[in-house]
Length: 259
Image (cartoon, rainbow, N blue to C red; front, side, top):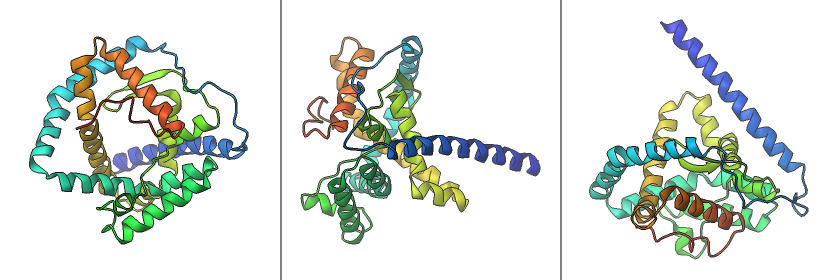
C-alpha cells in the first residue's frame, strides 16, 4: 500500500505543479504589459452560458449552508468570543500580505505596495503577530488585492460566470486568479516543500469558516429580500468585484450590512 500512496502523492504533486505553472504564465504575461497602458477590455460584463450548471451548484451550496456551514457558524459565534473571531480574521489577512504585495506591484501601484508593507510590519510587530489590526486602528486600512483584480487591471475580461461548490460565485478570470494567488503565496510553498500539510489544512479550514462567518449576514439578507436569489447573488458579486477592481471607496455600498 505504501508505494501506491507514494505514487498518488507524486501524481498529485505533478498536477499541482502544472496548475502553478499555468498561473505563473498568467503572471509573466501581466508583467510584460505596461501598467500605464492597460489592455482595453470590458471587465464588468459577464456571460452566463453555464446557468443550468450554476443553478444546480447554488442549490447544492444552499443545502450545504443549511445543514452544515450555518450550524458551524452558529456554534462559532456562540463558543468563540467576538474578539477572538476578529483575531482569527486578522491573522489570516496578515499572512496574505505577500500575495497582496505581489499584486500591488503587478498593478504598478507602489503606494499600495508600501501600504501593504507598512501594515504587515506594524501588525506583526505591534499587533501580536497580526492578531490585532494595530495598523487599522492607526488609520492604515486594509485593501486586499488578488490576482483576479490584477488581471482585470490589465484588461482581462470576466469570462463566464461560474458558481463553484462550497466557494460560491466567481468568474473564469477570478477562478484563475485564485490559482495565481496560490502560486504567489510563500506560506503555501513552505508548507508544500516541508510536508506541513497540517498547516495547509488548518489555514484552509479557518479561511472557510471565517469567510462563511463574514458573509453570513449578507446571504441571510439576500435570502429574505430577493425574489430571485440566483440573479441577486450574481449582481452583488459582480458589483463588489467591480468596486474592488476600481479601488472604490463605495465598495461596501452595494452589499447589505454584514453581521
